[in-house]
Image (cartoon, rainbow, N blue to C red):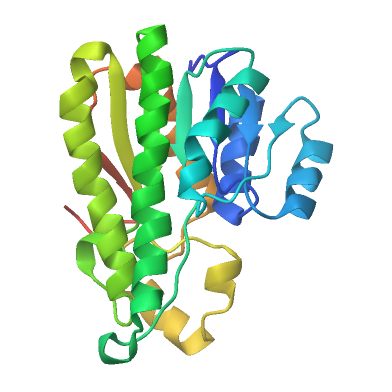
Length: 245
């Protein structure tokens, strides 16, 4: 049985569909959760659902404030950090020849640079505890590519490579750094996909369905637990067989 009782966990992008499920699953396993994101109303809703969790609004695009944010977050969690789930991210889709430099930079800066900084400063906290788990949420398209998402796919592929490097650097310090790569998951984002295009997507998934946010949350539980202690620098693909590495 997975035992995460009283473990201190930070979840970024907590107010989205996947983030919400991650918080719920961790809460069910009696973890101490600090949920963060930019939508204060949705964070307050999370607090109402799961009374014991802590919320701390933060915009990860403010890279210069990430160190201070983690200081505040760890203080809220009473002084130590066992696990961080870097789930926050953005998309600004466009065909390459139409993509502005600003669209490119925003996605790279938020998805990749800010995730690196979250990892960097989390590692500093974990070194003091002599252990820790970092879980970075990537995407199937970071491995397969996708039309109109050269910025997003580059950022997600970059997270995978970065996580491998960090895992090599800190494995001896008992810090595990892994990725989860979701396929097409039922969220507000996929709800907006044209039904005909959605049918085409599902036809390419051997499991013949979109994934559920809980499928990603279950993978988080595993990687956050002691069951994954000998797994480091890996990417867990959760996509119904759509992409097989």
